[in-house]
Structure formats: C-alpha cells, structure tokens
Length: 166
Image 1 (tube, rainbow, N blue to C red):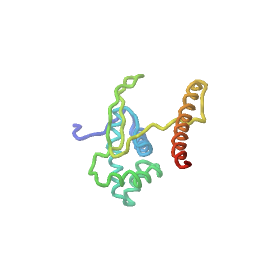
Image 2 (cartoon, rainbow, N blue to C red; image 1 turned 120 degrees about the vertical axis):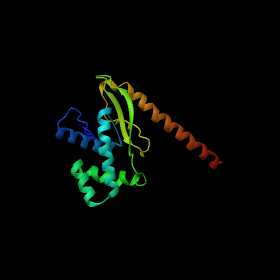
Image 3 (spheres, helix red, strand yellow; image 1 turned 90 degrees about the vertical axis):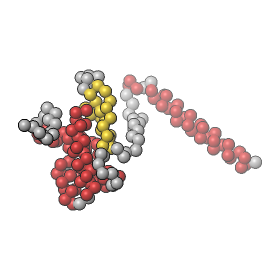
Image 4 (cartoon, rainbow, N blue to C red; image 1 turned 90 degrees about the horizontal axis):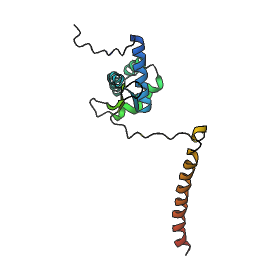
C-alpha cells in the first residue's frame, strides 16, 4: 500500500526531479516569486520550507545540508542571510501559492509561488539601451514621460526660488 508516500513524480526520473526542484527553489530565493505550473509549485513548496527551516537553525551543519540539496553557494548564502532572518518569528508556512489560471498553449494550470513575508514585487523596467525594430514606435512615448517629469520638477524648483529672490 502507498500510505504516507508523498513524492510527486512530475513525469521525471528521480535525478531529473531532484535537480528541477533544487533549481526552482534557487530561482525562488533569487527572484522572491516565480511563475510555474501548479503541480511544480506544489512540489516545490515542501522543499522551500525545509530550506528556510535549515536557514533558521543557522548552524554549519544546516548550511552544509542546504548546500548539498541546492548546490549553489550564492543562493544558500542569501537564504541564510536574508530570507531566514525575515521569518524568525514565523513557525511555518513560509510560502504562498497563487493560482493564475490555464496557460494558453497547453492549458496547464499556472501559479505563482512566493515568500509570504516579501514586500510587493514590482516588474523591473526593460533596459532602454536595447531597442528592437518592432519597438521603435514605443521609444518616443518613453522619451516623453521623463521630459514631463523634468518639466514639472523645473516648475516646482522655480516657484520657491522666485519668492526668495523678491
């Protein structure tokens, strides 16, 4: 009987599954929130929470255990230095899964997995130095917005200077 056997196979061999989950946890540590399929998010959650628990212990043995699982020293350092101290007063439930709906191509259910205590995640703007032929029409609109902001800054800077000059 299969009682209490919780391994989610994800259609992969054991080695592939272990590498996939370790990489997903490293991406979660790096980006604070990742978009993946619901099945993978549910499989990543227990491993991510175990890594945070190791980070809260903070011992050398816990660090080496996390490094053996994740295999990326930079991410283990960030886990122990940044993420684990944020969750010091929490007893569990360090991650949240937010369902997003079906993916358009294959109708796979998608989800965000993120840290519960993370601040609001904002999209990073694309670098302006790299422009493609298809995006040429969007660059003038982007150039107008900073011009408006600087004009309003100049106007507000000019107003206080006029009374001081009188």
